[in-house]
Length: 111
Image 1 (tube, rainbow, N blue to C red):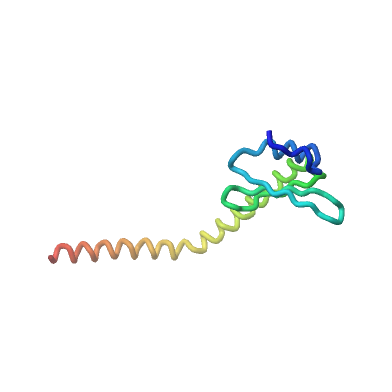
Image 2: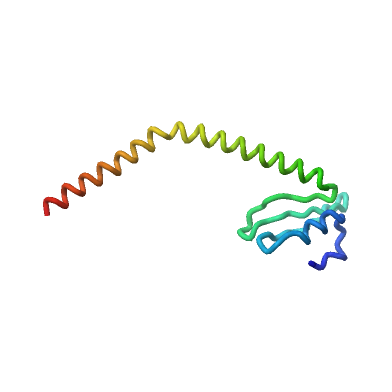
């Protein structure tokens, strides 16, 4: 268990920190105006993943999951539309690769 007794964190925040494994890092920030502790959870590559406020609880975590799932769904929809727009170009690239292969084959036969 990590040593977090002396920090002004909510019990829920302490629980979250103790659940994190070696794949994740965290940074505790204190907001001067309300003396509220905020935990930023980061992956080992330094990518920001989420923020845990002192007011968070299991209900708010479920809400965060719903929001992230919805965001992912929206991004997937956008990417599918963009990929469909790119499809003709992808086909051209594939045909160009086949053309190069045939041209290389012709050159190979000539040697």
